Length: 484
Image 1 (cartoon, helix red, strand yellow):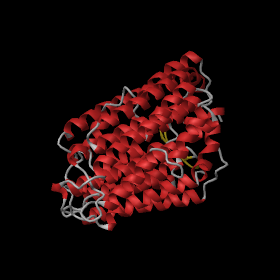
Image 2 (cartoon, helix red, strand yellow):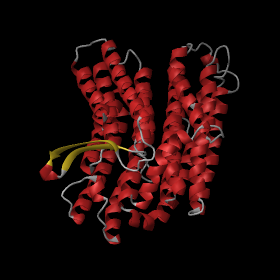
Image 3 (cartoon, helix red, strand yellow):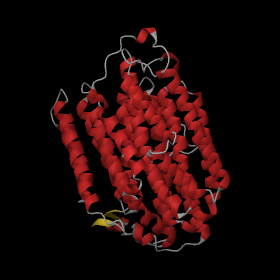
Image 4 (spheres, helix red, strand yellow):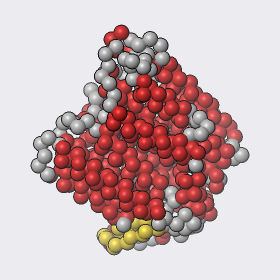
């Protein structure tokens, strides 16, 4: 069952890439079919998922390269399942919003499916080396998707992304190899390595490269500089996947391997990570205020909001760790919505410059539906009660404040600044008199807003019923904290 989540997009990528289709219609339909099939399998898994089970479910195991200790070992639990579902949903949306006349469609959809396969494989891997292989696999298609279909500085942004994330993988691998060597294990199975009790010094030495590696991926200040360039140059569907899914590989690894394998060392470095989370939140929010490109504003907001996950993980309380998973889902949905809407604005106006846009809420000649959705998305990102952003951030802050009050207060200030920089954008771009050169904008078809309405529905639904996500991850959060 779990293999199908990987094999369907993987095989689909190969079929789409080699099938003769010059116009791209067949490639698009095949990619869409693969994405729907994966989403349906996720629904089946969710229907049969046991929320009380602390272990991995639907496990699959096949011996692979035994002399290397590498096995094909898959499993899903309350930590990975919400992220697997998020990946499936956003992959489907990315295919849906892709321009039907995109150049080199076979290669594009092939890379998109390969990207999805790499992400879901990393979330499902129970073998550390297998996780690393998938962790590195997603770099390749994302590099091409930015370098070929990106903006004017796409070459620079793609190469910067490649160098940063490749170095991230090297550090993660170093931690895994060191763990296997010091523990004397003959395999890289997660459940086996978890049983080895290393000295505090050894754990600290192994945790250090892992933390730096995943901080690059998340990204956390000062390892963040690749992200704004990648987002600005990437096409809209790829920005949706980058912010919604691929950044979560870092936070997932932080919880699964950092907290799960090096708990004693984690407690020792947690105060420093909490301080860095507060600094990163303020830095991301401050940079967002200074931006003139709408896409850069959303990109820097991601740096701030991902820092909240680091704060929650550092606090190591049942509530804060559970909320970390919820915040991953929350940020994935909200950031995807905002990038989609910024993409619509850019497509219709030809610019994302805040100073060049005004009055887009004009009901006759502007983009009123897009503007209305953007306002709701901004409210969700700012933590408006009743939406998913509020409850996920509140739970993190509530769980972290008794342990780290100062870093939590810094992150709270960052949350307040979220409203500031997004309101500046909304006020300049959507209110006021419509700019003269924008009085004949092409209309937005209702179908172009279907993904945005779907995301908004989930943002409100999970905001009103957070237990739908929390019940999946709470038991697993307790298991991480107790070494279970």
